Image: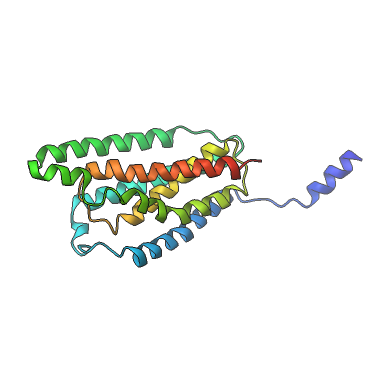
Length: 212
């Protein structure tokens, strides 16, 4: 009877593509990322110097840092979405990237005039920058949690944290097109704070919504 039941259950199984999880998560991120971009344009608008900003190193520093963190979070989320998923390299890579940014920030501050140092560190938007990143990250985070609920992460809290870092990096990348701050230390402090806040929110949601 047991063998017959197993055979009947297995008869309806259909093969799943090996890249199904990647495609599902990537699709969710792309769709929710578009929503975040539209929200940024309607809410904050593009930075006023967008015509010339791509010609500066700082623009590409923010672009690369935030997008790389989103990619590292994506890679960690993919692994942790599986029951046997464990990974360390995305976290180590993220810390190494932050270290490089801090080194660049020290060099930038060392070359700055005394009156330029504080604007490079705290800028004019330090009180709102992390929270704007959190808001712009919410569509991506909610989409990622929805996808993870269809999977089987062994560590729901850590999987939620990874999804939060992915969402936070994406939201920060979107926000960088509205932000005209030019300090590497500003990015290292306040962009990173916003991303980590989203990671913490993802961990909290994962703890309660991704149990199985």
